[in-house]
Image: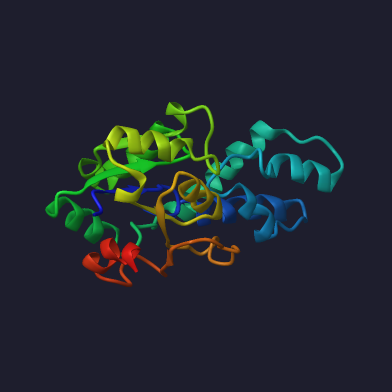
Length: 219
């Protein structure tokens, strides 16, 4: 029996990932360099340790860059793209139905709490979450399963009593390593990733009904 849901945040609840990709792509184009999505996708759901866009640009240009300046400019581009981004389809419905049926809900994210909470407050969904587990709370982020293990402990449930909702390959790997059934809802920049080992893949949470979502793990 499913007792809880654990959501990823970036790209799953709100698609903050696509705006970041286009923001850095704009920066790269200013220097006449392309930023392929397959390279950028390596850092989705995790850290720049897997792909560092600053370092890669320096390598392409064969010269050091002012990383602080590039970071400031990338944030300016990001604001331009994120302005009209809304909650992903089906998210509010799943959250409200989960609450009505007595399920506990958590977030397990490789981002920081200070990044996540303002978005949850802005979109008025913070109250749905019993726990928010972030990189502030663990020593290793996704694809390491520590975020999910911590969330399970806080929720006081077993992995088999939980469904993870993810959008990235790194997130999927983390959830499965923690022994959790994982539903993948790719966004614009993750839909081309080679998802393997997922339990269910949907275009969005709006694709199926809530009751089907929480019983699909039995199939």
